[in-house]
Length: 425
Image 1 (cartoon, rainbow, N blue to C red):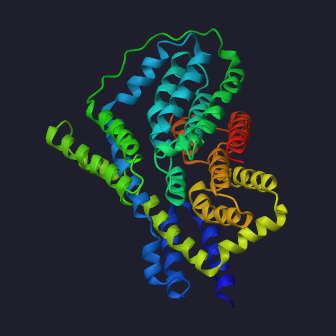
Image 2: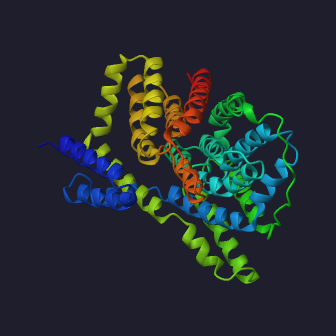
Image 3: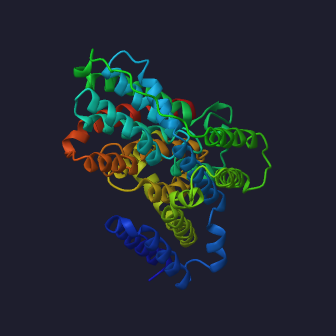
């Protein structure tokens, strides 16, 4: 059996296991990487070099800072203040959805849902309406905006690490509008969709509630500081490779030390360390090595050649295929391993067509991020939102989710992909 076929079979087995045993994904990915090394598909030196430490450090640091931000009470205070200025329940739901999207552009999607969903739940209970569609709207909106900035989602960090993008590049890249604006166009066009879906709530008023007290403003300053320092680092083209990761980790350490010395809450360092998703970090570590093994064995180029053959060399058809396939697959599978696998593929496709990789890479991110909004299991934010509802005793039928997820995804994905095409094709 040649090395390419062996690598492809091992990858297929790994992916099936990732789908079946979702709670053990990190173990499966690391085990697959070990098999690649043992069989000689990937040298040990190549395995270590394949790990993107900058990506892992950025993720760990932002996870810690976000936990401090949540503990401070600031997100709840912001959401509650927002509800005081909306005219009725319908606009309150839209405002909470857009607010969750804004927060998730800088904070992990799941964390955003955990912050904003309780506010939506309280509003639904106050006006005695079904909270299920409210929480679903919050979840899908947070998932959408994760692709807007460098720190919004794991897939954004993967994209930036692979094609060499800084924080500013998500806004203005190579003299053109960045992916941020494509995501925002999609977000704005979802407003009429949400207004129509919640038309029955028009005219119903919300009684103002007491605002949550903000325990500490330092975590908010740290989150803003992270964004500002990443923007500042973007101004230096020849900065060390680990710059962004060091920024995120350093501010996380400062936050933990400050809270510990402040003594505001016992065991704050323990809480922050528990909030870091080590399983995702280990999953990515394994995937980095597996994908390098696939690249070394020639599998990535073979997949790219298949795409080019099916697409007939047409850039437009190839783009539609990449976006469409990404939307469909991400409705049922985790977009982190999918994007990690497909980034080298779209780069290889671009090289075969003689174009830069940005068009296909941005289309990949749009499709993979938004595709998760079609089904309840397509994104971690959706699962988190449904978990909150189930904990409160509410049942979430698949049809309830599809009623919001399908129109929301279609309008956002089509409009976002169209903007990317018009700017980057």
